Image (cartoon, rainbow, N blue to C red; front, side, top):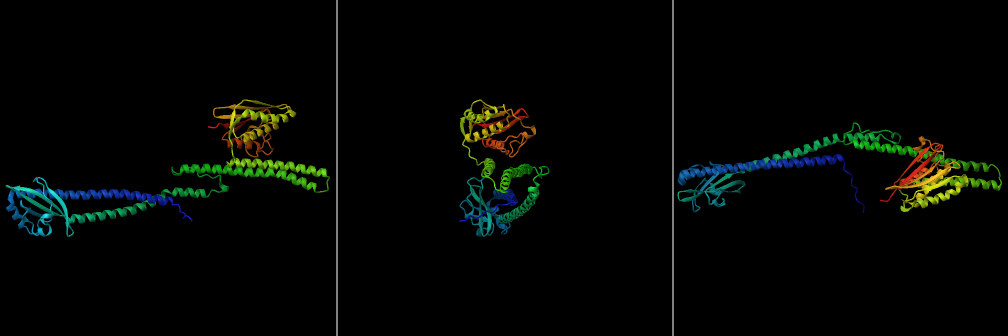
Length: 462
């Protein structure tokens, strides 16, 4: 079953959406609070006015008595007290007087029961025939009797005003959301304009224009780190591309020489019939050239695997002096013919891949022996630190000129006195790759006609 591929959302659309949602939330909260405060204030004011009205009626009732107050209420035409409706009940709950027509719309039993105290007022809301009333009831003493005053206020107009106000607030909110979205689109386009300009600048960079830079100056502060990172990346790409081009040229040059030798010798040999001994010499010469090619290819494959971090490392702790003595003993047999002495010093445990360590050390000793004059001396020293172990190979040979020291670890690089184990400029590059694979370092010190020292540093296991 194939899963549906989701298309990534654009940054602009996400910014517009988030900005609009944030504005909608803030506007909704602000308008909602405003609506609640206005409505609450309006109802509180109506309740206050209604309470004042009840107090005034109680005062009139107290001053005029039930008879005069009742005549005043009945003398008014129905609705004259609008939006107030008034009723007076005796102590037994019988209606003494009321606003004409009040009994049909608001019977006495729909009003709240009054409090026992004459200073307290009971209230509630009541809805009938699509209208909203606020009902209030209060006790009023007159003589030895207690009467109940019921007052109703028609608040239908207030409710309609509340609905209209709510509709206005909703319209304002909708218009504000649309305006926020339009503002968000404008701001986002303006804000991302610099990113588009940077994109167009980067699109102009190709394999033939790796030297170009976008430079952080002139860009917004948020894009300056990105510009710096791109410039650094372009610098690395330019350096890698240059080195790759040089490497390809050097590789072609190194492979061309032995191939040309084999091709020339073969063509010469085929010009006429030769003795079997001459053919054997030709085959032996070709074998030497093939071995040279094989060594170059093996070293290149090893260095490539190291660069790609695919070369396995079996890091172990071993006796470094024993390995050094073993390699020195092997080369002493060769060195005796030229009266070159090989001395070892120092002791210590080394954390490294034993096979790779031996390969690096063999390359260094072979290089030193190759460029040490007859009667010279080679020293192999081990030094232990708190965090690493160092192995230094020194000779008193021809040395290397200062201008070449920074590049002797590059592949195929050779100076007049370059160090190389196979004559192709890969020996020190291979050593550097082995040390890098262990997370260590390699450095070289040399003086012309005084000798060279190569020091390898292998970190200890944590």
